[in-house]
Image (cartoon, rainbow, N blue to C red; front, side, top):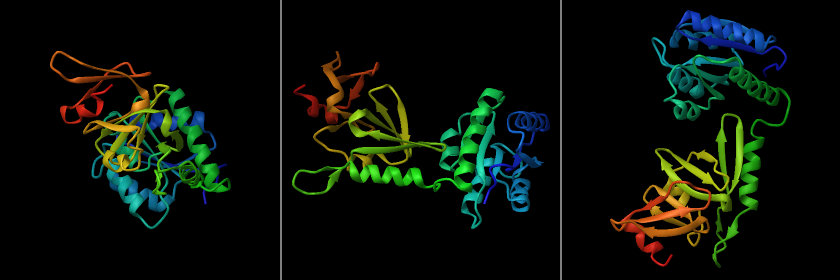
Length: 268
């Protein structure tokens, strides 16, 4: 059980000046944090976790011996509780992979104190929850409860259409009402959900699986990778090549409708 007053951390970073800079910044921003060890490669990081049982691991992605992503995968597969992981890297191309490994945060070097302070606050909240606050799974339970309570009945069948989406980033879970969604777009293993207020949320589900849970009288396929909410469609028009283009409320770019799905918008 972690202690929120004196948590233990490890730093896995193969560049000594960067490791020292991070350690000094943590000493300023989180003075009660105990940095038990600093290591410079993936195998050493796994060994240090076994030796010190840290609450937090600041983990570089590109390290000798074993990448940070591989280290995180092994920790998650272990029978012992994994520390909270924060990836620190010079590359921002691995953000989705990082959160897929349940990272609390993802920092890009050089890390500014203001950005690190946000991470520290996030880690403090997570440690406080694990030490004695509400269950760490409370947000997930809330999401499930809202989803069940918010379902709409499918006409006569009794099987509910999805009315809420659960979007997560780090330790934050956002419950997005489906009627606020303007369109959804497939992004590899994820779906980007765009809402009327212009925000984008990532959910970890295939678009095909999500489509089966949405009311088909409202959510229509415009492209194999795009579903639009008909209530958000402001206009539909054809360009010189005959393509159908949709203008959505609150969305600056127009959505291109594939020829295979153009008939769905013929009467608009």
